[in-house]
Length: 92
Image (cartoon, rainbow, N blue to C red):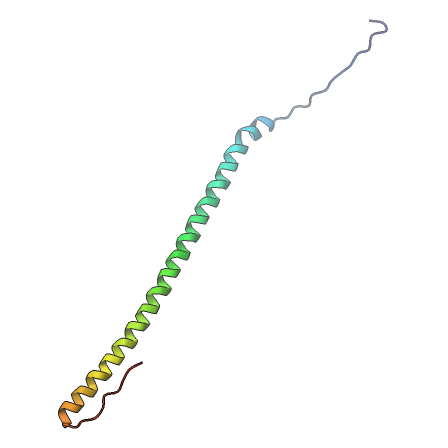
């Protein structure tokens, strides 16, 4: 043993290494799943918002058409009651 070098190697205890290798993939999967769910929910909300805007625009157009139709009917009814030959109003 004389003249031989002795090399000591110290390996510290790493109690969290096993836990980290076990939980890190699970944590990464949960992050990806949460991101996927958030993306789906936001896309669904955006889709519903667009549908709501379209339906509101259609409702406003329908109400305007109804008002124009009521005005034409009112003009016809007034013309029939009075017997006058008034020209009918034209709606936009």
